[in-house]
Image (tube, rainbow, N blue to C red; front, side, top):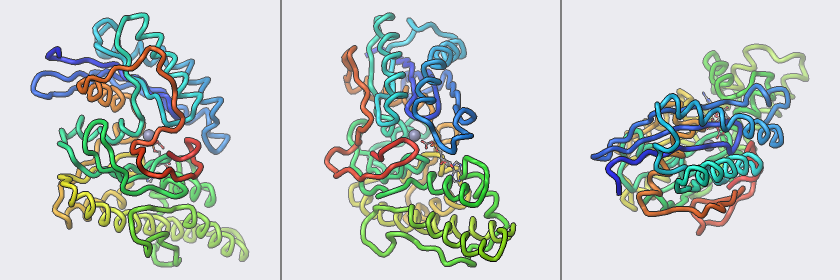
Length: 362
Ligand code: KG4
Ligand code: ZN
């Protein structure tokens, strides 16, 4: 094994095209040499959601540019890298395929090993890149496309403790924003609006809270917001304060559910030796949600880890890092690597079906 390991990572599984270079130096010192993300938010904005065909085409157009920029930012040539790592799933198939085919071409042309990375593993292993967390630890992945509690026991050893049975929380934020006429992405809009709202005015549900276990559900909450909005609008237009109160009530419900389910997941993970509670995904950017999760970790006496926002949301540094972890374990993929739209991290758990920003839930 060389004393430094430099890996180019590529990500194209949803609506961000990304390329990054991460180097692992002596004494486990990891460094992000470059991290380029080209967002497609503007391309999809008028459709109210990610359009898979548009996403795939944009990835094809942007992958080489992002890669060139990532290499230039790092001051490296492709030949200076030790391997190419690419998201091989789960995600929107057209985008994943674009990334995999591009990575196959690069690796073959440069004679480099190829590593197919699970996108969820990229998120779940990020706290090792940012905070050097040791195994095992508990990870809560909360974004527009994912929601799961994972016990991370090794770089390719994950146990799913709970997952959403319908929407992801980011998706619920986005749909709530749409219902209330707020801008996308919905998370930041709802959070801003909630600041001047009364979280106690509407009695919104806390789905699955009275059921044991760590599974979650968010679609009923969004429907409850819709019902309250329709009732208010029967008396005329929605007043500014109504909207703020609905946002505050919705956000408080999400906080309560995530906090209680985290308590239960921590209890399970603790028994399995977890030494920290980590969170990743765009929803982890939400101030009150993050504060609620910090409180839960404090109550349990567990260290809390949340990567900086740029590494919480989709990026390629996490794919390069997961590639490093796989490379160190001796994994290499065949040049004929294929894209997997579904790829559960824990194959022993029954899949849950729901449809979201990324297509069917994994
Ligand atoms: O991780 P991410 O960038 O992409 C994936 O879905 O994988 O997460 C995006 C999601 C969106 O649904 C967005 O509304 C949500 O994260 N989000 C937030 C906040 N910022 C982004 N949700 C709640 N509060 C926020 N401040
Ligand atoms: Zn993601």
